[in-house]
Length: 156
Image (tube, rainbow, N blue to C red; front, side, top):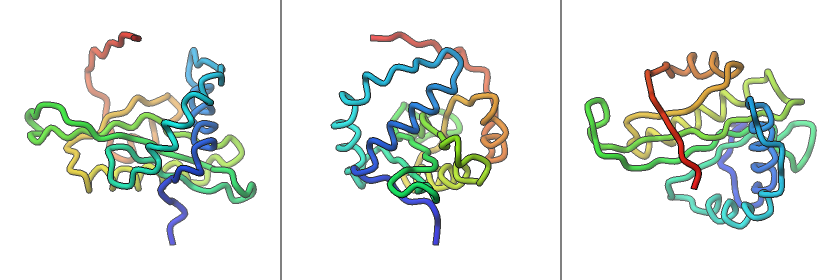
């Protein structure tokens, strides 16, 4: 039996807690948690969509009942096709985190493997993510590679 399971609406607070762990570990991460309460209703609803374009895979914390040890979260979207992805279905991994007390046990890898399978089942031709230096070896071992990408962002 797999340690990994699909997150459900009741996991929303823990998903946000682990997302905050990830944000706090990023260079320039914003430690504010004021946004959590506003985010909860939407996250609960999205976690309840079994066949949607959003999924979170988690491992329950082995020493803390009700807590999560790790998570990997992603979405699938459509972009006009191109060489290498003619159907235009793309996966994007945007949160991978492990509770500091549960690291180095393979939980993030197990969650990522389930998320990658979920992307395959939905016909994604490519999966993208941004990697911290600490997590880069994990993603490289799963087959991810750097690409020259002039990504820019605008906050609305």
